[in-house]
Amino acid sequence: MKYRKMPKSPERLSSLGFGCMRFPTDKDGNIDEAKSFAMLHEAYQAGVNYYDTAWGYHNSQSEPFLGRFLKQINRDKVYVATKLPCWLIKTREDMDDYLAKQLERLQTDHIDYYLLHALNKGSWKNVHNLGVLDFLLQAKAKGKIRRIGFSFHDDYATFSKIIRAFDWDFTQFMLNYLDTNYQAGLRGLRLAASRNIGIISMEPLRGGKLVSAMPDEVEEVWQKAGNKQSPLERALNWVWNLPECTVLLSGMSSVEQVTQNIKLANKSKAQILSEKELRVYGRARKAYLGRVPYLCSGCRYCMPCPHGVSIPSVLGMYAEARMFGDEPFNKGEYHGFIKAEARAEQCVSCGTCLPKCPQKIDIPYWMQQIKDFYAD
Image (cartoon, rainbow, N blue to C red; front, top):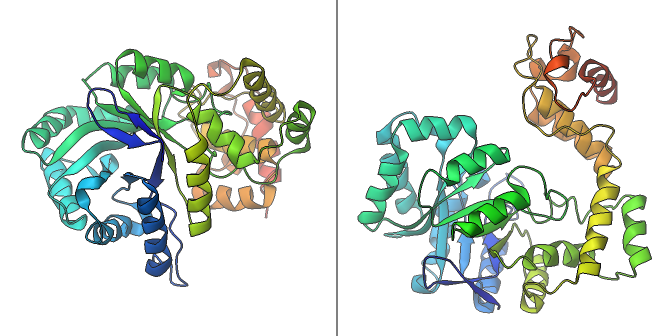
C-alpha cells in the first residue's frame, strides 16, 4: 500500500481510505456483518490504515459496527475518523454528549481524526456561535481526539472563511475531475495546501456517476485519446495525481471493489499524469458540462423563493439528469430528496428570482421544463 504524510504530524496515511458508508446490507436494511467484516479485513491486511465513519451512516449502524471491527485488529495500527453531526447540535453540551457516545460506539478511548460534519454557511455559524472551537480544543487537550478537521458542502467563499477561522489539521471535501470549480474545488485545494492543512478527498467517483454508463460524447473523448483505462482507474488516478491530497476516500460495497481499489492504489503516484493526459480530462469535463443547458453555480442568490421552491436543488438535480443521462435513477432521487412543497411545480413564474441570478438563468422557464420532466 502507498502512504502519504499528513501535514502537521509524522503520521503516514494510506493513499486509499475506507469510507464506511456503503456496506452491503441484508433484506431488512441492516449492515450485512459477514460481508462487511470480510471487506474491512481485506483492506486491513492490504495496509489500508484510514477508516472514515460518521454518526448517521447506515442509519447510525456504521460507528458501532466499525467499533466491533476495531476489537478484531490491532487498534494502534489504524486511524479512525468520525464526525460531529453539526445539524443536530443545539447547545454546547450536545457536543460533549455526542463525542462521548461516539467513543462508546467505536469502543475506543480516542478518535484519531475528528471532523465537523458537512459544514455549510448555516451550520458553521450555528456551531461556531455555540463554541465548537473551544469544544474541539478541550477534547484534544483531554486526548479524546487527536486531529481536528471538517468536511464541507458549500461554496468556495464559505470554505475560505471557515478554513481561515482556525488552525485546522485537515479538511475533507469533494474532489473529482468533473467538479474542479464546484464547492471548494481546486481553489480550495490550493488554499488548504498553502496553510499546510491536510486534505482528504471524498466523492472521487461523484457518487458512482463517473463510472456508470457514460454519455457518448464523453466516451468519444477517451476513445479519441487512446485511453484504454477503466472509468474507475481514470477517476481515481486524477485524484491521486494531486500531491496535496493525502487520502482518497472510497465508499466500497463489496470485497471485489476493495480488491480492485487496493490494486489501483498500489500503482498510484502523485503527479503521474502528463499535461497531455490532463488536457484529455479537461475535454471529458467539457463534454459532461456541455450536456447541461444552463450553468447554475449553486450560489443561492435566487433564494428564498416566495413560493417555497428549492431553486438551486431543483436546478442541480435536473442538471445531473442531463449531464449523466441517468433519467430513471435521477427521477427517483428527485422525488426522494426534494420535498413536494419545494419542487418545480410550486413555481408560479412570478419572476422574483430573475434579477437575482448572476448566471442569467431563465428560472421560471426551466421550472416548467423540470416540472414536465419529473411528472409521474
